[in-house]
Amino acid sequence: MTAAPVFDKGLANTVAAETQCSFIDGAKGVLEYVGYDIDSLARNSTFEETVFLLWNRRLPTKAELDALCAEIRAEYDLPEGVWQAIRATPRTAHPMHMLRTLVSMLGMHDHEADADGADANRRKSIRLLAKTPTIIANFDRHRKGKPFVRPDASMDMATNFLNMLNGARPTAAVAKALDVCLILHADHGLNASTFAARVTISTLSDMYSAITTAIGTLKGPLHGGANEEVMHMLNEIGTMDNVEPYIKGRLARKDRIMGFGHRVYKAYDPRAGYLKTFAKQIASDTGNERLYEMSTRIEDIMKAEVAAKGIYPNVDFYSATTYHSIGIDLDLFTCMFAFSRISGWTAHCMEQLVGNRLIRPMAEYTGPHGLTYVTIASR
Ligand code: CMC
Image (cartoon, rainbow, N blue to C red; front, side, top):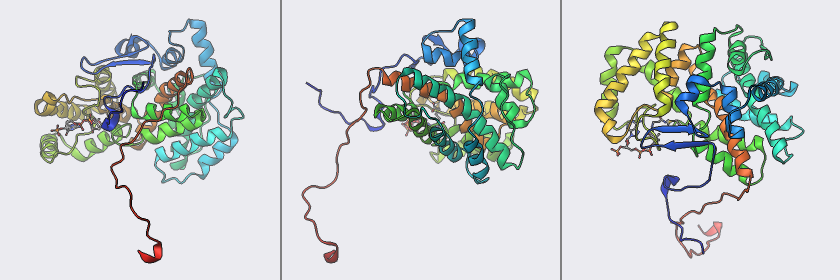
């Protein structure tokens, strides 16, 4: 017998899937991918190795990692139709609208788009992961009136992305900063966009549809859009002197401070700790110390004002400073999140398809009953 359904607004107390991808203990501030603490992965792993971990539930051997990297690099380039679509995209389009549309378009250029089976889904996951950065970087070039920079298969994902974006190979330190951000954003339990992807794939739709759904969901400011909002806030604050009146003013008006708080973490977001150290280093290397100092001042004020409610910086807070310091435009920040999270979304989709059951919750109807239909002419 099935238990009586319980209304759970926001599904905050509902367990809707089993997963072996990531584990979160919100009270203690713990995040693990497949049992490995996020901090040790950020310090020691690479994004590509993290992808292997999420997809295979174990760390690779050197040969296995090399093989995955080669498969990804072989898929960096885009179908000609997608290069043309980038050229046809309005330069004023928000990058997340562009990304949602062009990732969806990739499905039309993949002869395996509707092929099912684990091997086909793995190949599609590689294509989605490999081609998304090429789309993001070259859309940015297109909108700035710059010529495309084709991907370079001799480079890892972070280096190749920055090389396309800026038309110049990044320093190892800058590429490493991006790689760390990619690791930290790769997976995060059943967050809204991952849930959305799992709902779509549970209908036995295809990988491209599931990832398109996820990108649309990630776009919202309560989810992936927050790091962009953090940067807007830092720009709006402008000076150190303005930090305190700005933050206290917002709190007094009960406005939210972007980059703080989390549905799951009521302790320090474990992704924010190492990122904070990293943001400090990269900000100082790139002459953005003021931004970092403003951020720590905001954190201090928030600690005094709202830490008792369990509100601490989340991953988006220091990723904003990091992305800005490595020269990524602020309206690309959420695309960077998508670039990384495709690894987790695809891992969850492949997981969902093993023993799949359609995800279909219920709604509590709160409207009227038994109304008499009146024809339009008589209303
Ligand atoms: N600034 C100020 N107050 C806050 C904030 C914030 N950022 N977040 C929560 N609160 C307060 C909220 O006003 C409420 O106070 P009270 O009980 O006095 O009414 C209390 O904390 C609980 O808030 P809630 O809305 O019930 O918490 P939630 O779990 O529904 O919200 C959240 C989680 C992430 C939507 C929210 O914290 C928020 O809006 N944060 C800002 C947006 C943001 O940074 N989002 C990125 C999340 S991390 C990326 C990811 O993993 O997706």
